[in-house]
Length: 438
Image 1 (cartoon, one colour):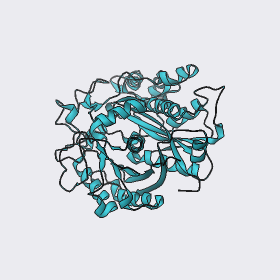
Image 2 (tube, rainbow, N blue to C red):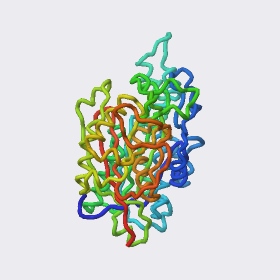
Image 3 (spheres, one colour):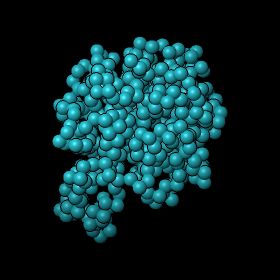
Image 4 (tube, rainbow, N blue to C red):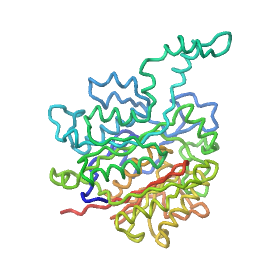
């Protein structure tokens, strides 16, 4: 990393386990699946009818009163990001404009934001009602759509579905005028957002940054795309909790899980100076792209081995220094095998002796929201000195010999390596380090 050290001082996690770091911490160590039958919409016609769904959720609880009308133009992905940002900044103990505008303790131009996002699907009911007004003689009429049909959508309709709106709303709410970006590289995006944020702090252009990602594919279009890619588990609708089994011999596909995680990254000296709780230090980042991974019919880990080696080199550590791997583990057999090979290539002979964990069995696949949650897991593992359990793991699939366990394990954890990949060929990895008491 660059000259200035980077601390993680806040965690904001929004998943099927609940909102905030403490519900997530409890669920993580408990090791119980939150996957269940979908009731957010009618999924009865889909082969996979289960997911990691967030219940009773609205961003209205997590925005200032004068901003609540804006929730009407937030897709669910945006609402998750807004709630995660609120939880994270409160956990960090930093007062922004969105917390108390009269008593802020961070300069707006020193507060940045890098949030990973995915392809946000439109609300089909909302769009369908408007389209129906442009039907003439049983056929959709483009001219009629332009004349009157499109006027049946709210003027701000498009703003609900732009990926950059996750960062947009968070920066507006919290008055963040520092470096801001939206990263859209699938599952690898969250790690990329944290890597970019850490480097912004390291080179001195920001002091505090919201970093991570959020996504919800729990809708008809998201389900359809994953179904057509043959990625979803369709043989355990009657046993949802046991459906997603990352790296397990009985894995049969993934399940969608909506959610995300935002971390508060902060200049280390600033954090120490205000007496902040520091979960861990970000010390390494690496990214890679496998052009062959653009073929979505071919299982690939997107060059994850390259990203992992880069992250370790950036941190100045060797595979033998890594005490825990937070793996991606989609539960899709070909993807699990490709990822396991990548970890083996990156870690060499140290892989077998290095504890590992994966979250997907508990929460489902969160896509662009994955990285922030996996990095939060890494930070909490350091904080607890516990390797979290891998839900639904019983025995390794052939060729995927990671050191996983369905039970939590006490360990001396100083360095954690975590990485993710997308079906589009991108990958990214980060190394976190325990901060010794001064």
